[in-house]
Length: 454
Ligand code: NDP
Image (cartoon, rainbow, N blue to C red; front, top):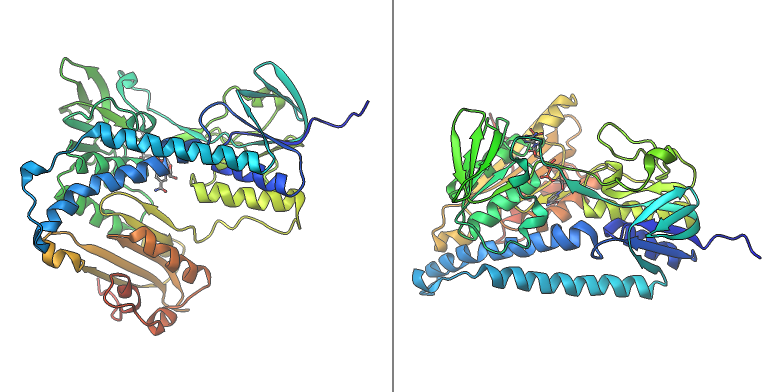
């Protein structure tokens, strides 16, 4: 009888990182199983990036129709009707199609899919709903989950997961928080016709983003009718006959039809048995790993949101690729967490890469700032009062571009290419010597000649 384990690798969690890891490990010759207790694809596919982006498209349609009038298309207000159930259910069909694709990808890669809930018995044994499997290695990729602050009535608050399956859209809604999810859902709700309030405890939302970007987004969101309440927080939520009443820290109350808590996400580790195994976690509950994704217990690895690195799908996917190289390939790859471009799909959206002006100054750089704000060409005829903002943060001594930031249509699409330039160490002189594409908004990135004087 052979003593070899059932698998070379058991991956727990079939989200973006886990699925990529399982497939690539299998294609490198390992015998792999992946365990999932919910729908395939994890947060991103099911209740995150993908359905969110579909909702963002939906939320923009009303403006597109309004903008069409300046181009000669006569659409009467009464003709614009929106049916939430259609958007929600079409989105769900698309997500189910993607779940199917994930299933096929897993099958075609020769990975065994086990649907159930896993716990780790020891570094070489995983139990899935009573079935015990042995393995040479375990990789934990269980992701993260939304966290709601513990206040009276917090059970009335929804989290982003719920927003994708609402029976009905309320007339009014309140978004609690000032991060990615808060501003994205505030834009979605407002775009779909819900009277939306955003409550954020700090001076201005999107902490960590460039100050000009934060200010510009706040201005544009307010112009689109989102009621922004900064420097206040929710003390308590009470259920009323019509909806909810919020007691705010500024002493006022606010009535609303729905409360969405977008107050951060924490690593999802419960039930895995980490404590009894001695797998070390940090104060925030993230599994501590080294640059090979090894936890404190030999044979147990972890990647993605659960290890506390930036909670972004492309990060988890890249980590999976690096880990496969380390386990089954050349072993030379390491993660590089610099120059991570990111987009926030608020309306208008943000694209950003590199250092904010504030981060650059705090890091001791002497910086030159280039900034432009303009009305995108489309809105000359549409008549829409909406401005785009672009900004470059440049090292005054070396001329290297340290950061690029934008608010405006297609900011995410634009920033991917700019990120390549920054990663390659492009100087402002390289930007200046690059020929623009005319007429686009993007050409502004290579035509900003005069430093900002403030
Ligand atoms: P974030 O960490 O981005 O934001 C959390 C927000 O909640 C912050 O504004 C924070 O305030 C606030 N907050 C935290 N605790 C409290 C509290 N006790 N009371 C009041 N406010 C509180 O988390 P999100 O939930 O928005 O998103 C999680 C992550 O998911 C993001 O960081 C991002 O990595 C990822 N994501 C990425 C997207 C994309 O790429 N487009 C889209 C959506 C999510 P403060 O700033 O003061 O701490």
